[in-house]
Length: 206
View: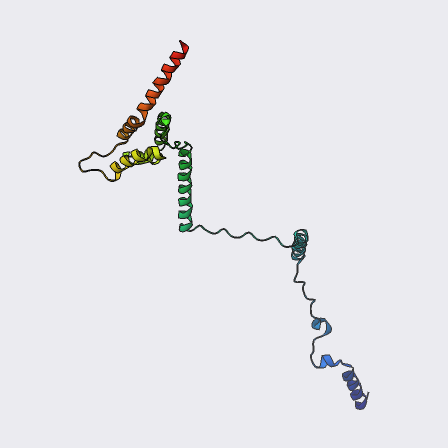
């Protein structure tokens, strides 16, 4: 083969070489990038679908999502004191109501036949309220406050003056003394009337 023929063969071989090889570019195998990995694994995809289905079911049943419960607020010291005070007042009110079940005496209007009844009702009421009427002055004023009418006005005023305007050197009015004075003023006539009725009844039986 001549020199001219050899040169032609070399040029032909050089022309058949791919450009990518001449430029040193990577081949198809190396240039192919790996497929991107799926970020969502099967487990994550399943969990996401489950919670989505649960939310949709909750929304469809009630029309709205379930409200989150509000966090419980800690009671302050002021709130606790208010609650304690309220409980104490309620307990006091209960005791007061228990004591007030006994009716107050019917007012005494000077009718002598009601003397014993009035004294008895007054004694019962005072015994059932020992803390409210714990001294002679309160007891005397209670009895006098239930004397009504013109037939008791004069005697009531005289006894009230012994409490509010006592004379110098005069002993303080006690409840026992007031009861005794009340009996003396109203009871004797009642006793006489009762005796007279018995006499009349005895005459009728003869």
